Image (cartoon, rainbow, N blue to C red; front, side, top):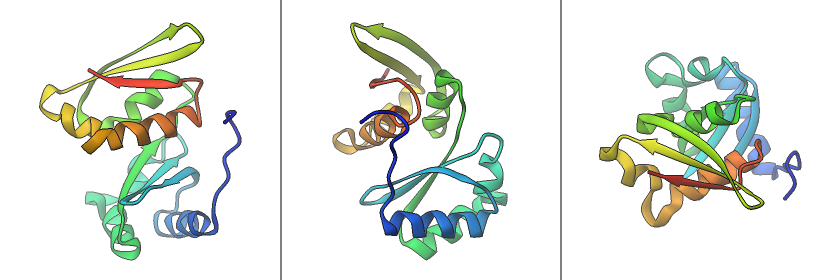
Length: 143
């Protein structure tokens, strides 16, 4: 899928509207998965979106019955990848070209590496999808 072509379902649009109403922030992207909603907010709006002590996230979780993950957007690919994995104590992000593919290696705290990848690679798949929608990065690995 070429970058820039993001389409939302009616449900996703409702989630975006609810999120913006609850947080007072602007949603740049929303990815709905079975167990969670991933929201990408405009640069500088991350902590406002989460709310004091996570109150907005908690409220949204109660309203949607889904886990809520907030990511702050960045034009800088490395920073954006770091933001996607921010809950896993990112130590570094390195980007490299592998043939025609742009690859990111994210080094996280070894204690949470399994969580960053997720059960059956679920979190890594979600991260890969959200990153590829905004930056020219097709593959990600967690080290």
